[in-house]
Structure formats: structure tokens, C-alpha cells
Length: 615
Image (cartoon, rainbow, N blue to C red; front, top):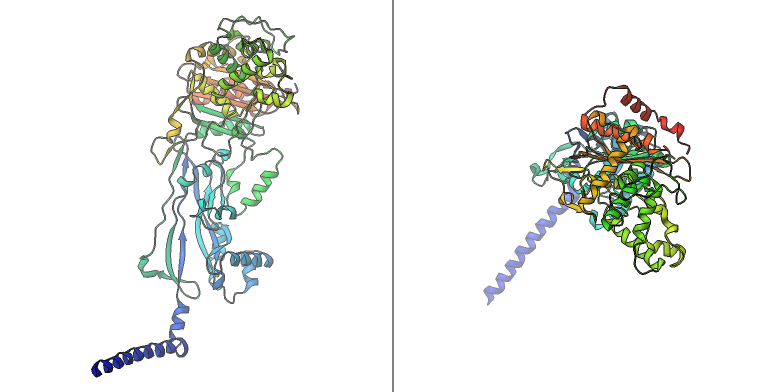
């Protein structure tokens, strides 16, 4: 027992001696010796984010639309700022002293020990001017990354832009992978395909001395992770066609959408006025954005998907198809041009068939077609029949994509409007309205609103004889040669294929007949049979809007197009010629070298139609 008791004291003594040794050593390190202090001050581990290359975007022929351009952010770690010459810093970086103080305050509010952006998006020249002096300012260092560059200055509304992530998003768990100062897609394709384009950040741990000079990787990069570049996108845009349309629409307001009806791929997407997308890059992004926002011509408005206006006479094609489906007319049905019902702007012979009604764009004809459609009930109660007829008609219209988001791969698409009985009940009461209240719907006026995208999609439906693919801007992701699955599904409308030929015949006559409203823009002589429909949309605030929608060729169509030009008057003398010029360029690759086509090209480019757009 005595042996065990002595053993206990021996063990206690050993623990005491070991503890004393550690205590003495620690006292020596922390108080007496400066060696470890100098070593700690001389080297520190810095966590450096390695930003990935954002995915590139190409047109359908492989031309680069969006590239990456290097920029440099000045980062700050407030804890590491020591004895810097603040005035010299402000002179070097060309910022006011008050701005310096505000930025330091913001950095400290975010984190005292973590890096945050201090100055962003310095270009290569700006970086070179301060690079050698940065060593004077401990706590500040450079972080290289890329922003977007646009070699062709086209397609601004579809491509969109990237910007610094907002504080609100940083608080959202859905954006947990982002840090302050990170860039994110704000609009357009950049926003819609953010998760595909963004890639994945990497991290490198570097040893730096007290002056911020890099001393090499920490433990030979054992803890480093490599960044992963974002995936590239192949768009459906034909850059040559896009730039041609932008050239023609320069100085005007409106929207143009061209679609390949066999796939739903968007060939051209123009919103005018447009802007150079390079304006929304670099450190002047904020100022440039505010200037565009204040511009009275609204260059930031994405007209092909956001601007909803009455479709005008183009809507008569939908009326005809639904009436044929419901059996209220046949291809041979004729109605007189009775202008006591509604005025008709076109002098023409008696429209003895549906094709002639379309060719002449006869308003009284389609007044009677729509009247027969909505008043075909059997209850002998005019209010009940009209309610039911209007809503049954509307249900079929919706299958054409109107008053709905088509699902294009862009954010903020507008639905548009097609009136319902509920709307009129709300305005007039259930027995306060009848056909005379809303007959303007028959000619695409009144309580209707459609986007240029929806009108182009209507042409794709007619070209396909009853179905469409959701219009989309991206053909494939990283050369998969396939769009997303939702863009490969056919969407059928509520009209049998057999009813499309009489309507298509009328659309062909619009362009080829001497009475056709689109004969000015006919290009049959170039070997391209265009099937189209003109429209002139009433505008209470000024000159009427011009609209034209078409597809070509009649057999095996390759392009469906809608052109909407604000305040341009007759669709036949402004929108239609532009559309057929684009059709000709896409199908033939060039504009014919003859005086007539060159005259039309000059007329559209110079905006000659504005001189007569007073009606």
C-alpha cells in the first residue's frame, strides 16, 4: 500500500514538472522572446477567391456574342489596415476623402476580419497605374476577375447584363454561394441561365508578409480548390439578320421577332431603341444605367416581350381560324363591306370568300364573323348567349398563346390581354353589355393586347398548320446540340389542321393580289412566296402604329416574323417592307441588287414613312 501511495506522488510530480516546463516556455515565447512575434508578423495566410470564367455566348453560326474582359477589384480587410497615408491613398485612387471614410465604414460593418470590395471594376490601365504603389497600403489588395464584353454591340435586350449582387439577395438562402461584390445575372439570358453561366468559385491560400508581398502557397496548395468555368451557350440568333434589323430600326421605336417555326428558335430579337450593351459593364455601369433609365425613349424597355398593344388586323387570322373550327363560316362564306357596321379603310370589291376577306382586310367582314361566333347560343337570352359565346371563343384564343406567358427563356415576359365576360361584367354589370360593346375585338382593337413575340408565334402556328414550339433563344448548352427539354415539346392549338389552308391562301393573296394590303412588299419575283397580314393599330396619343406578321416560304416555311413599329402609320408601307427585307436576307442571304429593293431598304432605314404617318 505504501508503494502505491509513493507512486501516486511520483505521477503528480511528473504532471507538475511538465506543466511548469510548458508554462515557462509559453512565458518565454510571449514575453521574453521577440522571435515568434516577428515570424507571426512577417507571414500571414490570406484566403484568395479565384473567380471562374463566366460561360461565353455564341450565335447560331459560332460568332461570339459575349466574351469575358479582365477587371480588377481593390479588396480591403479592415483589421489589417495599419498606419497608411490616407491622403496619398485618395490621391492615388482619385477618390474624395469622404468617400474613403464611407467605404471603410461599410467594410467594417460587413466584417472586421473578412475581405470585401473597396473599389471595383478597374480596367487594365487603371490597375497598372496603382499596382506598384499598393504595397504602401497594408490591408488592401487586388482581386482579378472578369466582366462581360460585347464585340458586336448587338442584342442588348436579349443578352441582358450582370451586376453586383444586392444586399437583399445575400440575405436569401437561395443565394448562399454568393459573397458581397460577386456578380450575378440581372436581366436577359444572363439572368435566365445564371446557374449555367456562373461556374464555381475556387479558393487559394497564400502566404504574405506584413507588406502584403506574396511569399508562396500555403502548404504547397494542399487546401486550395480550383475554380470551374461556367458552361457556354449557343444561341439561336442569326447575328447577320439581327444586325440588319437593328440597322433598319435605328432611330425608331418598336419590336421585331423572327422565329424558325420548325424549332421555335428565335432568329432575331430587336427592341428599338436599343443601346450598346458595353455601357452596362465596368465601373460606370451605375451612371450609364441611370442615364438609360431617364431616357424618354425608354431604351431599357424590352418591347418584344414587355410592350403589349392591340394586334390590329393581324388578329383577324385568329378570328377566321376559330370561326372555321366552330363551323360558323366556311372558306366560301362572304359578307358585304357594310360600313354602317364599322368603317373599312380599304377600297375593295365584295369579299365573297374568307380568302378575299383576309386579302382585303375588310373590317365589316370580320365584324360579321365575330358576331356569328359569339352569338351562336340557343338559349334565346342575348346576355346569356353573349357571355357564353365570348368566353368559349376566348378559351380557343388562349391556346394560341395570347393572354399567356409563352415561356421564352427570358425573365419578365408580359402576358398581354384578351377580354373576358368577367371583365365586362366588372365594368358594365352582367346585363349592361352586349356584342355592340366589344365588337372592336373582331379587328384586334379594344380590350386586346399582344406582344411582338406573341404575334411572331402566331405566324409560326399558322406556318406549322396548328402547333408551335415554345420560342427560345438558346439552341444548346456547351455543344449538346439540344435545347432544354421544354423547348422540344409541340404545343397544339384548338383548331384542326384542315382549317389553316384557306387562311394561308388569303395571306398569300395579301401579298400577291392587286387588292392585297401587302402588295407593296411582295417578293414573289425573287422566288419567295410570303404569306402575311398587315395591320394599322389606332393610337389615341399620336400617329397609328404599324404592324405586319408573316411567314415564308409557303411550303416548308423557314421563318416566321412580326414587325411592330410605333407611330409609323400603315403597316403595308412600313412594317411589311421591313419584314420582307428581313425574310429575303435570311432566305437568300442578301438583298437583291435591283432599284426597287434598294429603294425600300433606303426608305425604311431613313424612316421615310414617318412623313406620312399622320392618320
